[in-house]
Image 1 (cartoon, helix red, strand yellow):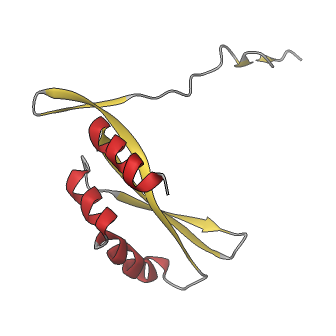
Image 2 (spheres, rainbow, N blue to C red):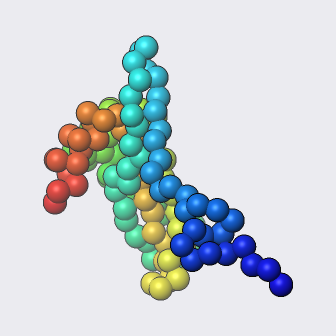
Length: 113
């Protein structure tokens, strides 16, 4: 039986690149867009996690960082829910798309903590 796997090249060819570039044209200018997890929080094992996530989501949105992200994000930030079996609960992440300049500001102000 022949195998197409090579440890130095991966399956069927060269190692895929991990660099992704997302660009968007806004007002006739091209911007590099960064997809960033701007906030995470956890919930315990609850019946309706989306309902219980409403309060932490609103609290984040009304915080200084939340207001800034909502104003400067290219699109409305998304939130994602993941089941975390190690703690029998849910992990939520808020993901925003930011332009280069805004990403740099966000990183310097809030990500360095």
